[in-house]
Length: 264
Image (cartoon, rainbow, N blue to C red; front, side, top):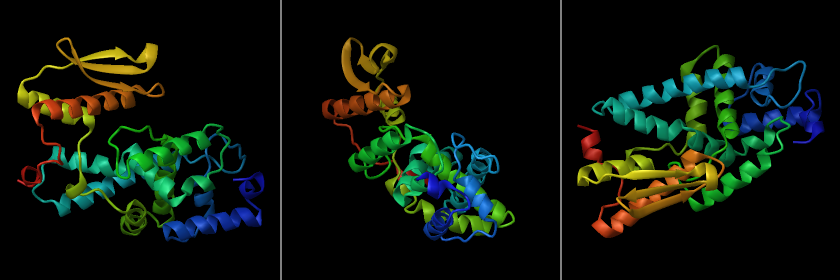
């Protein structure tokens, strides 16, 4: 956004707020709440504080709404599996994808020189993994924060109405991850497969030196991942590589979770 658009009193700024309202399908009674939800801490505004408090609120509200939705939708699902399903819908990658899909980052008031590069990296990741990558791409938290801060702002503007806030959140989050397309994080999937086969894994941490994580069975290298910006992403990439190699060697069935087991 340009400085002109960023100016709270400018016609372009007011128009940008209307654009966001159109995207989310909700018109704010208190426009200042939306302005706050779109203000990063790097942007200096003596009148408007950053979105951090609204993001904190929106994070909790969104987690509760998703929890409530799944609790009644899947009455026989165990709590641990409900947690996996919730995470797939509200983790950093899922919410960053939501912000990117709807172009919400374009309305953020900020002075973060790295944002454009982060958005471009996410764009390339989404192209490679159209659905959730389960940790194989690094998703910028700042994009996820925008979604949570907007949800927090809606919650306050509706006088704390969960029903009205859920209407907005559910629309934004579509398509929601369901049992039919739920998959496991690569590390979890690899560890579960190896436990079933009685295989012991060893992780070699070369991340500080080269950005690498290597996985071994005995002296045999079975997986390697590299990502210098974040260790967790490098570890996920290594696990995905190891699982793929094991699947070829041992004939592992690479599919989604056992839905029948989840529902019993």
